[in-house]
Image (cartoon, rainbow, N blue to C red; front, side, top):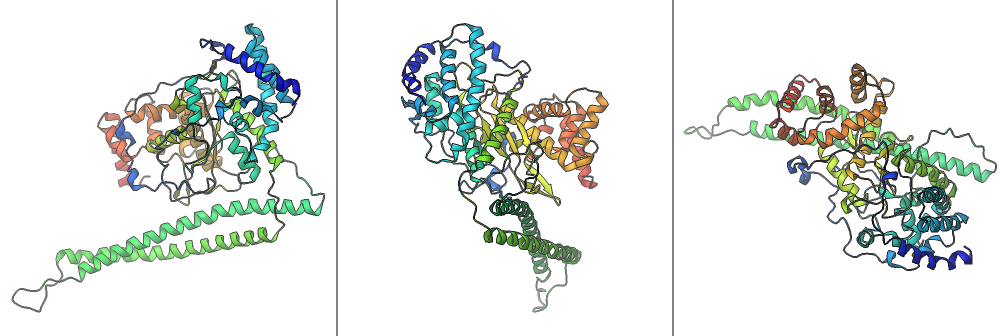
Length: 573
C-alpha cells in the first residue's frame, strides 16, 4: 500500500466521523423493487413442544463436517451473544490494518469510499456506490486465500465476515452488539461465516460448491501432478463410500435395536406364560393356563416370526455393512500409501469458490436489490435478534424443525436420516435465502446440502424459511428424479398448479406457500388453498402434538386428522 494511502487514512476517518453524525438517511432508492414482505405472527408455545427432553442433541465438540445420524435436533442456544465484548472495533488502526498489504483494489476502494462518504450529490453517490461494489469484490478476491491463516489480523477477518470496513459507520449500540457476537463456532453446527467458509475450502475440509459449468478434463503434465490427481479421485471415492458406510451402520443399528425389543417382549411373555399360581388346598399342584396365558401363545408365535424375519434382514444388513467397511478401508489404505498431500492452502479451490460466493451474494439480493457490500447504518435496519448471526440462525432453524420435523431428513432404504445442511451466512442486505445444492454429488446418502442466508434482511425468519423451502423442494425433486412432475411432494404440487392454470415460477409458488404453511397454518390461521393444505399435511406433516392442538381450533384440521387415522388403519401411507 502506498504512503499516500496510509497517510490519508486518518483524514478519512475524521471525515467519516463528521459525515455519519446524520442518522436520517433515506434508503428508498435501495429497497428491492420485487421484495415481498411477509407478515409474521406470534407462535403458540404449545406448537414448539416436540419432546426435546427425549431427543439426542448434537455435540458441540464434534467436527462440523461429521454427520451424526443419531442426533435428532439442534442444541438450544442459551447465549445469543457474549457477555464480554471484543475490542476489535475500538482499534483506531482498524481501517488501516484491514486494507494494508492487499492488492491494488484496496487503494481503489479507499479512494472511491472517500468520495462516496463526502459527496453530497445523489447522482454522484450512486456512481460511487457502484464503483465500491466492484472494488470491494476485487479486494475480497485477493483476501479470500488469506482466510486460511489462523493468525490473520481480526480487522481483515471482520471485513470478510461482516462487511465492516469502517467502525465509524456503526451506531454506538450497533458497535456494542457486533462486538458481542461470538467469534468462534461454539455450537458444533455447520453454520459458517464467509471467512470460515473460505478457510474450510482452503484446508480441503470442504469441497467446492457445485456449479453448472462443465469442467474440461485435465491431463497430468508430470508424475507428481498425476499422483495428486489420483489422490483427489480417491478422496472423492472415499467421501462417497463414507456415506454408504454410515448409512449401512445406521440401518444395522436399527435392526439390532429392533431385535433387542422383540427379544425383550418375547422374554416378558414367556415369563408370564411360565408363571402358575398354586391351587389352594391342593399344594404343591398349580393352576392350568389361564385365558390370558393361552392368548400369549399366538403373541409368542408372532414374536418368533418377527424375530426370524429380523434375523434374515440383520444378516443382510451386516453383509452390506462389512462390504462397505471393506471398500472404505481399501480406499483409505490406498490414500495412506499415496503421496502426502501438501497441507498449504489450496489457492485454486478458494479462487474458484470466490466466484461462487460472489454469485450467491447477488442471488440473496436479487437483480433490483441493494448490492452495497459494506456495512453501514444507512442500510442496516435489523434488530439484534433479526441479524443473521450464527446463533440467531440456529435458533430459527431449531424453531423450523420443531414445526416441520422432516425439514432436514432424507429417506434412504425407507430409513429417514436427519442431515442438516451447511449454512453460509453472507453479509448482504438481501431478503431471501436459497438452497445452492441439496447434497454432494459424490455422496447422495449422507452428505450435507448447502443453503445461503443473508445476514442483514428485513425479516430473518422469512430469509431462513425461504432457504429451507428451497432445500425441501430440491431434495423432493431429486428423490423423484425423472418423475418429479408425477410423484411425491413436487408431483402433487405441480399437478395442483397445472390444474389451476397458474403461470410463473413453480418453485417460487411453493416457497411462498411453505412460508404461509410455517407462519400461518401452524398457528391455526388458514391462508392456503384446501388442496395445497392437504398436500403439505401429508408430505410435510406437523408434529402430532401440534396436530392435536390444531384439530381443536378448526374442523378443517380435524378432518385432516381423521383422514390420517383412516390412512393409517388401511396402511394407505
